[in-house]
Image 1 (cartoon, rainbow, N blue to C red):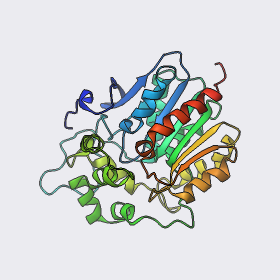
Image 2 (image 1 turned 60 degrees about the horizontal axis):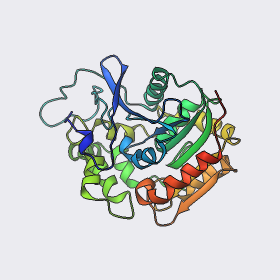
Image 3 (image 1 turned 45 degrees about the vertical axis):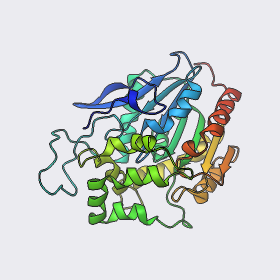
Image 4 (image 1 turned 30 degrees about the vertical axis):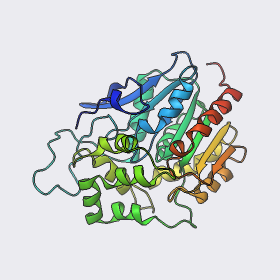
Length: 318
């Protein structure tokens, strides 16, 4: 893994910590804010990392305790091999450790991290992209803890019938050639940083998103996430996806905030409407001029809106 100095990243004045989430495999995470503050757990997806949440952490950490993991293989966490998939042209990965890059592994890792930190009381769950499936996968067995929801361009149910599978995801999920090219040239992370917003990101911000995945070994998680997307009952993650879908309405009585970039080519209006049906009392703020990385396009509006939402719905005392 290429060394990245967090202090050199734009708008990321944090001190990441590390936790051995599995033997020989360390997870990087942020734990910012007062130890006795109300806890906000922020879960990213693919191909981002905790960097995506930086503006929200900066807007909350004076009062709220913000816990933001980098999934294994993502961001500043370790990037172990899994012993499978397309091989590079010359030498295999040098990583000796193996990891099963599945949705269930992500849920298990989040469970282990929060247990390690002693987070047993009420929390706000904030999710984006496949962080929705991971976060709600954890929430299924921690329903009483999840007292507020912040949901940004994500999913917690199967691909809606009216929504076609985007070809960019199919390229990585279903094509060996596509998977090789994405991993070899870091196409997914670089493409998301360039095309996931409606307003262009500064080059140093795009590089901050993509640099953790430069190189064959370091890009493994970006392609494994795509290959694990569940579309049918035969897929490994399908049973967990179905359990999350069935359990989502049980959170309808919790305060929820839906922030949406409507120009997202994946998690578009169809996904927003799915959440509105499942969580009919949710506060909704949607933007016609924002894309997938909605916190990049509209963080000036969203951070203050989320702060007002949290302040207006204090968590019960533990």
